[in-house]
Length: 262
Image (cartoon, rainbow, N blue to C red; front, side, top):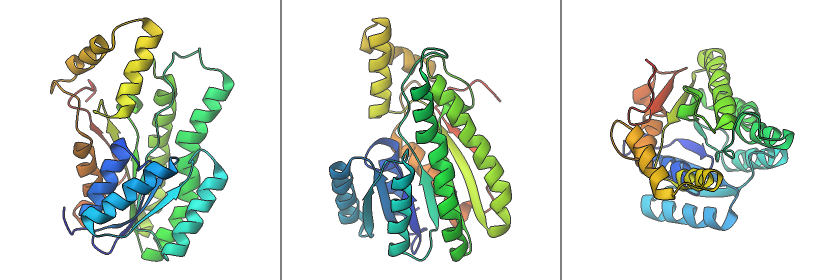
């Protein structure tokens, strides 16, 4: 993929760590200039400096909470000051708290809605006009395998990740005449801080040992291991590239074979 995105301008959310950072690094190695977004200002600044140093592309860090409408407006203003348009958007957020279907209170549901689904809607309202200025573009929404096959104990993710896929599918048909492609990726268990957080939350809730929980996750995956964030990032970069010019409106699992559905 090196060089295939030269001259492109990408916005990558949740880019200071985990899957978002891997996506930002891979897009940068492919030649795209970046705006990287995260709530952690200090960590984001270090990430931006390292990516710029290693790849030679321009990287602008913008600290923002995607669950806050004013922060998204500030992000879009910073993007507009940097470039006249946007070529690539990677929507990626942190995961919501684990829990069963009825144990979360109203605030937890409202927070998850704002962080996951409403953030996607708000970003797209601002980004679509900027992509139209470029004559097209590519969006990739990072969701979860839970959107395709609900996972016990992850009801907030199950509900709102599925909503993102429905939104993206609708958007893909509406924006196809503008040359804007919209796709989703559905990661399974990856070796990230988020996975370790889920293991910790399960251990705290059930009293099980953390190593036993981690081993159980690995045994569920036919490939027999947690995946590397770079394995997801490679697909995201491909979906944003000219090589994927005929692909829109799909949701692709990257799960090591975890899902049972066809």
